[in-house]
Length: 400
Image 1 (cartoon, rainbow, N blue to C red):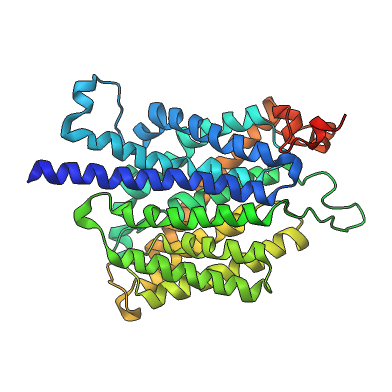
Image 2 (cartoon, rainbow, N blue to C red; image 1 turned 30 degrees about the vertical axis):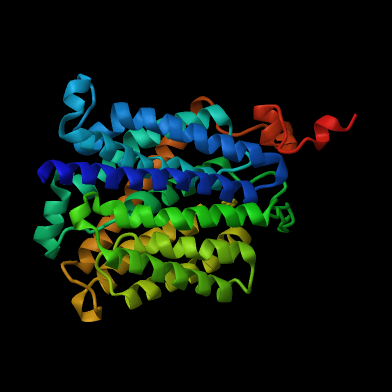
């Protein structure tokens, strides 16, 4: 029976890894649909290449930093316990690779390709696993300090803070280092609209992410005996809350409607194993409204050209999710308990500090030494022709 359980765990976490791997197609199509037509191919190529670079960075560096484990041993050693440790690496890699996939949406349309791959290696190899080890592997005794100080450890079941807030705050640092797309904001204070190239592709990306998210959340249990239907129900309720809140706050705008469920799902990750479904619904609803308000504010008032709104969606909704776990996870509000609001607040703040600081260091260094932005002519022509030498459709190549 022990062998059967181990094999079942391998299959369980493998299926989770595959579902989250599929989410990277969602990242790609969400970006493809949001950017202008001349940058569609670059969105697809970036996500695939960033995932590949992330795999090498996490395999050789990041996983060892986070968990003290490496795979520099013979295959006979690696396949012990049916290879569960290797499949667990695959599963956690898909989380790590979400970091550059999140950042990609913020820096779209004007970032150089090579330096972004270098940033991916540094972020997934060093910055992300540093906080991952703290939150999920007791690194540096910080979780023990939280428990002794506040009564409980920082809790992030599926990565509201570890993945999403970290990715979103790194994305904000990258966007600030790059600056706005040329022509986005006029010298007289006016704003030039850069409308999405394809709402259907944007919607497809959102749907792929929504479906995959149930692997992201439910299968964060990592072994089949710990699987919880509560996580699935809470993910569903948060998704619904985010959708409806974004529908109302966004006044039927389809871009907001399709990002609303993602905001809800980002926020519920941390406490999805603790909350009552009504608490998850409220958490998702707040996140959906928060995204609409903050996306509008950052784009129009603060003139931060975060193309897909990765800071509001992942950075702010992820931070809200970390804090919301400390609110709605409490028994007084119908949760399972075993949570401390102060630990959630402190752990979330620590994740933000590491992410934003690490992002500034990585992108600041690359900007200083190699440059991270396309020149004006290349940006005008678009990343598809400039970087990949082909456009997303054949009209240009066939009009002779």
